Picture: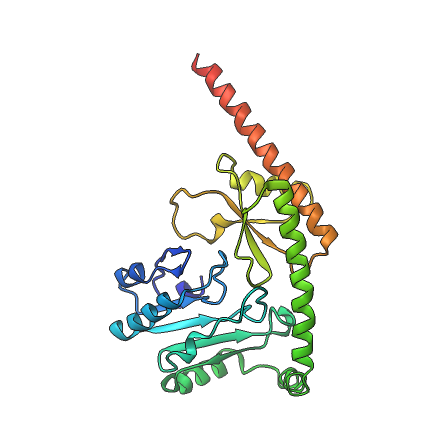
Length: 273
């Protein structure tokens, strides 16, 4: 949406288990790409080392740039932190970050580590568009980082989120069976793969009627190619009790969708007779 408003043409590029499909990106004729390589949004996969090098080669081939949105890399649970693309090629990669996930979105502080040749024009555009970020908020954040309290905060909430993630994983495995969740290694969200026979939109609406708000993965797709239904589940701001209740509400929403489809199929069969 933001790219479109800026007059750019947005083209979809598929993502698989290794992350962004660089061959498809190359075929798109694009010269700029936005990626979330540490924890792809929304699928949660990490960009593989091979794809990272492919992406750097693509940028040089087309004289292009890479926008690296490092939105939740601080929360990685089961493996070492994933390195930044910006370190591979500072002349081609813009590293974008903020405290929206680590502290709160309301603080509205972010940063851009840009290739040197773009710094002047970025600074001018920032000045013209918003007159800068609040100085007192920046000073408070700097003090939090310099004092070590920001690191202590990250360690504490990382353990908290890991516990919530584990509680969600356990309940989903109990209710839906194993291997239904994707993108669990990092972040505060995961993808729940639904049975192929249910209607994703119907499950979202039914869950909402039961007091649970979830998002269908269809909202994140730029194409209308048929795919297996799935839900995006956030767990960062929910208690373990709320997560367990939410899983059971989603299971009920899935059951209702299956029953509705079955009734419709029977009705269609009767009408055909």
